[in-house]
Length: 81
Image (cartoon, rainbow, N blue to C red; front, side, top):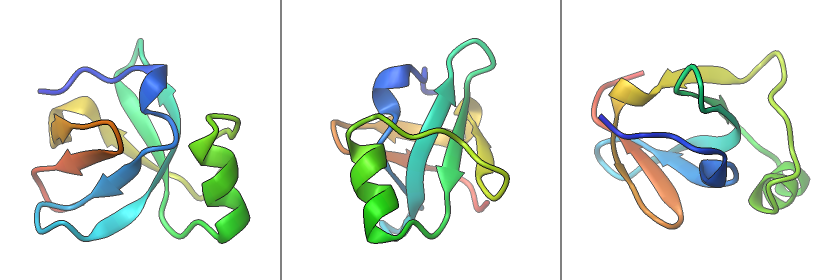
């Protein structure tokens, strides 16, 4: 299981095959949940990349136990969402 932190905000969420699912808008480190915007537009991606965005009602919740690896630019899930 990966350990999520606020430093993961703005990273891309990828599936096991390397396809982009969305971008992490917010991380709740206490609950170990990442909130992911499934279809960010260019402006949203830019704002999230700077770590300045927030989760909204259309974001999906991804628990840390669904994430296999974390790199400098992405989180990769090990299960289908």
